[in-house]
Length: 118
Image 1: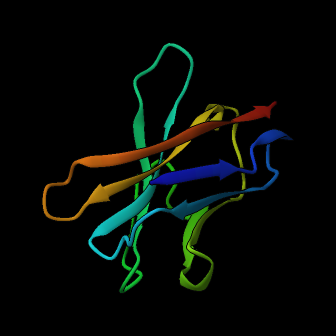
Image 2 (image 1 turned 90 degrees about the vertical axis):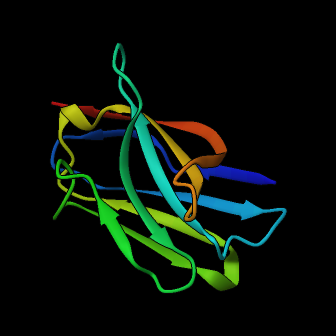
């Protein structure tokens, strides 16, 4: 099983980035596919997730209205569109697959660094 994240980079405050995560190796119909982030010196935190099947989404309060998670089932890829970025969004972003039944993350992707300059 592999989750391959991409799309991080350096952007100015107010700008946008889109992260992608390509999933392979199994079917994920019983999983939330999502994003977490970890800023320097802080714990990893939940950002957003989506179900493969129904497209139901959940967001952290800190990103609601600015970030949008989506998926393309045909490409086995899910995305995080990040708009109106703030310096406090600077972090390493990780994609993950969280089992719906247990709420536990079974699979992590490698991180991709997002840096927002002021």
